[in-house]
Figure 1 (cartoon, rainbow, N blue to C red):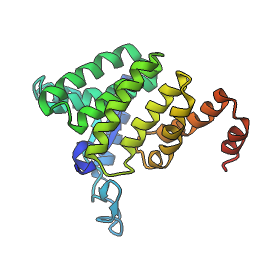
Figure 2: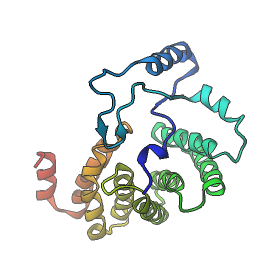
Figure 3: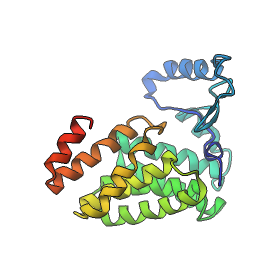
Length: 228
C-alpha cells in the first residue's frame, strides 16, 4: 500500500484574489517558516509523523507559474490542476473546474498509469463535479471506480476512501437508490473526520440527513439532528 504522504507534495493550499496578493505572500512565508513545537515533532499521526515545518505550501499563482516549467506531461502539473479544480467547484466556478480536472486526469493517467492513487483522486474530483451538475449516474460510476483504486492503494479507514464512498452514496441517493446509498453515506462518516479539506466532513455529515429525508425516515433524521 502507498503511504498517504506520497500522494501529496503540499501541506497547505492558499488561493486568493489579486487584491490580497501581499497578504497571501505574508501568509505563505509565515506558514513555511513556522517551526512546530518540539513536543509535537515526530509524533505519529494518520498522515505520518508531524514535521518540524509546515512546508511546502501551495500558493496558486506562484506555484502554477513554476509548474509551467515542469512540462505539460509532468504529474505535478496534474496535481496542481486537480487541487485548483476542487477549490473551483466549491467556489461555484464549475466550467473552469471541469477544464482543469480533465487536464489533471489526462496528465496523471499518461505519467502514472490508470491505477495510480493520484489518478483515483482526480477521478473522485471529477465525480464530485458531475454530482454538482446533476449527472448522478455518471458521478456514481466514477466515484465507484475511484473508491476501488483507493482501497487497493491506501490503508483502511483513509479519508480519501471515505470521500469516494460519500460521493458515490450521494449520487445513489439522488437516483433514489436509498438502500444502496445508506451504507456508503453512513459508513463514510468516521473516515471523513480526519479529512484535511475544509468543510468536507461537514458536507458529508449532512448527506445522511438528506438521505433519510428523501426516504421518509423521520425518526432517523431526528436522531442525526440530535447528534445520536
